[in-house]
Length: 500
Image: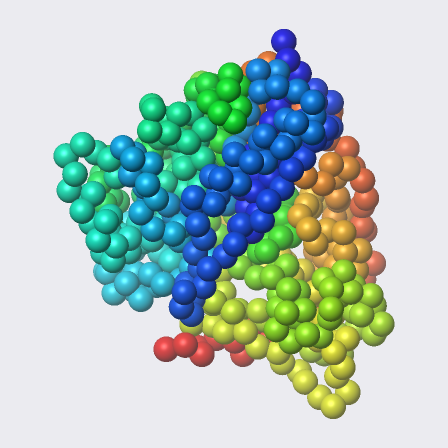
């Protein structure tokens, strides 16, 4: 049997294909960028056609680089950005509009007006999600209301209209497209749409009716881990055997699969996931109840998630908009040139605050400015804002799940920043641990595909493949920690109530 698995990792700004061997070592990788389009303030789009085209290319490039053919792959896993919404014609394969990206806020006004308070509570009761523009359902409704081609196809008797998150679009193309491709999504991605009933793991007729959508337009919901269908070009013969949302994949790749285990991803945004086991925990502190993963034939595992909209993208903003740094890697050295933040706090609420506040009216602020402050203090405060926002969601998770985390496993592009990771450990008062394999999102998809196809026999075997690279321990006392957090929360209040 082949001992190779391929992971497709479609993120917000790029698509990668990574081939792993049975020791979970990456032996080949290819990556292509995905352009983002900003048609109006608060609108974020990208080309779904480009997403698939790039996926096709990077799979071929990775196979060539590895020197193997697709039929030598035991399994293939897909992990993608979640909530991003794509609509297409299943008969022709035509994309009907640009993908509306998860960061897009165009539907917030519609959501604010569309539902009564009791309806909003019902949506949250069924889905575990707050009613915000972040999730997919309102994006689907916008496409129905505003795109003539979508409106027309909605009345098509042949059932040609297809909605889906990027995983569904990639899976459909990968398994045959117009020639019998499977229109599927997994429970983790479905749980991010505001349309799946968390108690049944099925599309809810009630929710679809509230949003003015038809379940017939939606993909079939399948377990995250289990053989789905054979692939066609560019991976003919490989079995599609895993689909996971990107944050769930990172959690699975970090082997944070037991109740109380947690990972935090530091990327464009920050995403905390705390595994709560087979018990669904309802958040009363501003977090999202979501599905962590489901293995075919088994009960789903649930998680609490805290989503932070702006973290790594704040450093890009310092570079591209303010030009305080010329390269993202410069941020750490400049921040280290001062002893502390100079009592400056940056709240990067560029499009409102996500968890645990859920305040779309908030906007970004820099507070505490005096003549003493230099750009180094502002850069340091910007890095620290990522740790403060993570503290907020971790504190909420511990309150909801009635547990105390004993360590935090971290991944993503910012975990190479030692200053930030040390500050995170100081704020939390627990160790922060970085894994030896940095590509945890892709690794999670590979783990799932390999588990489903027999490359690995158990989750215990996967845990043996996970190794620690570096650990940061807290270095400050409780009084200093409380002082910093109090000042942060005071800064947050200054960002609120800006938008009417």
